[in-house]
Amino acid sequence: MSEVAFTEEVIRLAGDEIRTCIQCGTCSSSCSTAHLMDNSIRKLVHLVLEGRKSEALASESIWLCTSCLLCTVRCPRGIRPKAVISALRQICEREGSVSRDASFEKIFMDQIRSRGRISEVLLSAAYALRNPDAAVPIMEMGIELLSRGKVSLNAGVVKGMDEIERIFRELGND
Image (cartoon, rainbow, N blue to C red; front, side):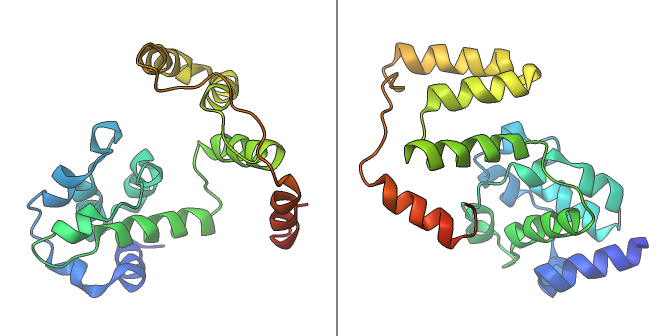
């Protein structure tokens, strides 16, 4: 896909108003996960407009968006930066790329399926085992949350697991 074709594809998916972006940075300063991103939302929009496909699609930032829509609500030009993120995700998935955190999603869903809820401790431990480079930050955060009483070590199984199983069956995940 050429640079122009890439830009046009993102614009088709995310909206023509992207062309009017003035690069003010309001989207990035509104983002609650900006401090974790390798490229700000503003920069991703810039990369798209310049047709820099490989750089935009290689950015881990597209997988860190929480879909809170603050970037969209606060944009002075009425642009939907979240739609750009969604378009980039869609292109990545269509081309066979997925988030490096697909393992996190699998662990998350496995816990829902087996317990009906998430145990932050078990989720973090399982993720750290599969992604050793994440172990130290997870442990640091866990120690801080545990010391403040924000994490429970007792996450039991919910009542009504038959309903959880039914939902998974209906979704075709049995």
